[in-house]
Amino acid sequence: MNAIYKIYKLRLWKKWVMNNRKHDLAYHRNLYDNNTYENELQRADRILAVLK
Image 1 (cartoon, rainbow, N blue to C red):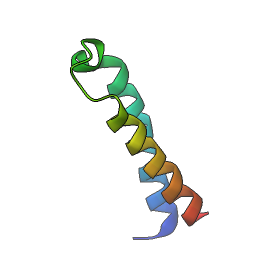
Image 2: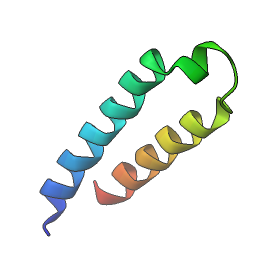
Image 3: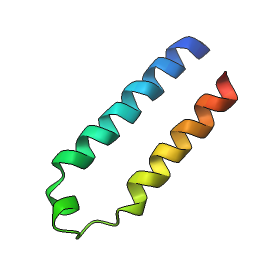
């Protein structure tokens, strides 16, 4: 799997995480640990930074 494809997948995944955050009922009810989303996004950012 080449790096460009990986980056593309990561960007899509990041977008998906953001979208899910908006529509997640648990997020609106504050039942879900909000930090989990932030951690996922930070991890995606770190991986993208390494791949650049």
